[in-house]
Image: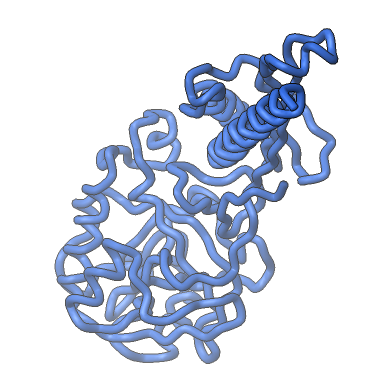
Length: 330
């Protein structure tokens, strides 16, 4: 009877340790995958966040010291500890093993401890449906071919067109062609790019807090709506100042500085524009400096196209352009 009770105590303890190790690798893999941005620096950040993971084992008293982090372009591998470059790496695998002491089973087994292991894989998973999180502007696709739809990383494109756009005057550089200007005018209306409800409260909530009144999916149509231009501008500036880096002029500077918290990075649906306004996909943009959003309706709202958006990350993703969310896949 005493032996059976002792065995139950050790088995129960090992079960608790197993849950502690699994909780550690789950959270560590999620945080590691969030750091992947297509560069080797992303791997360094991923390994650091695994090392700094706050989870403990042994009733939350002991740090993990035998954790291995690897990376892959596929959730099925192959897995590499230190890839030569970061392109396409969007999955992180974290493995951990601890030697859990046993107190009663050592009388029937010579080992004073049992190894307990766990593994978790997290990745940047494509997201095509949004019920919240999109910024309420929809840029013009330059062509229908994904993943960039004709946009070039580093190019400055239109979130909201001016009410009377003219070539080489009040058009964002990436859209400064007669064909795109004609497309922006084809549907008429005052708000060429804004796609949410037009009350001041909704405009502010949609831009500052990513509130949506409608679920949006690839293949849906967007509707250009009216609204107070000054409210849009004020809300954009408020959003920019929520970022811990409101002074970097370009995304390259923003990343090099390492101070931003991601609030200037927005994800928007890219659509075919007139006449169907079909959502082809999503893209990440960096909001410009506050003084570049001027009052009035005859100036555009521009932003820098940066590629892949990862929800919750202060940088782009490691894979193809589009929108992604980090999830456990194992």
